[in-house]
Image (cartoon, rainbow, N blue to C red):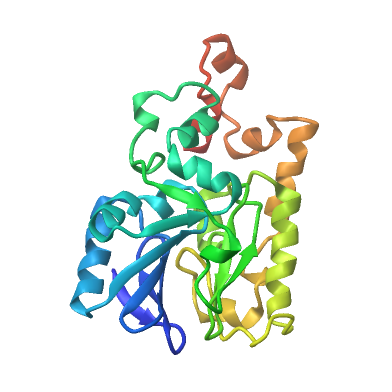
Length: 272
């Protein structure tokens, strides 16, 4: 864990629970794509950079989920670097309380204010075109998060954030966390198109935000890396019957009784 892996000539990633992109710039300057799950991850990343004589210049957050921005504050306080995120992800990253509040639908209790769902505050700025490093390209990939973005580096590596999920991940959690199913499907089509060469130079390596199941997924193409595409379609049932997916997951859970007891967190308990 926290091993530096080379993805292209000047692009690397740190193998961690949520992968962290490392891209070399001028001289010994580096930029990060995401920062890890917490301050401990931030310390490990800083130690890894220091050991190679690399100076952290900027961080780019793919989205505002705590496992991707948890190291922001630690790294920013030590390196004094800028942090950038797209659209609403910038606002959510600047005020992390919104993340558990969004999930809970109310003022979140203490159990939902832990580091897995709520990162420490950091100074995040809107990702404007001029903030990108030379030769970088920002790839909007909404669906898993409102304004999630991936990045293509000058040497052809493409960081895809949480646009893809492995079969092992879906088998473990049964459902994918999405804020917009249609946007996610469109993002998958876009990612699959990267293989067709609509971006130049042709992407040399596609890097999901979390560990994939194996090399076969890269050979099969982007859409196949999120197998059982029908898992996404189940979310569409929410419009007609909001509790249908939950009943399929936990038939024994009495949702009506939970509502009668005023358990606003019933949905979270079903998915736990």
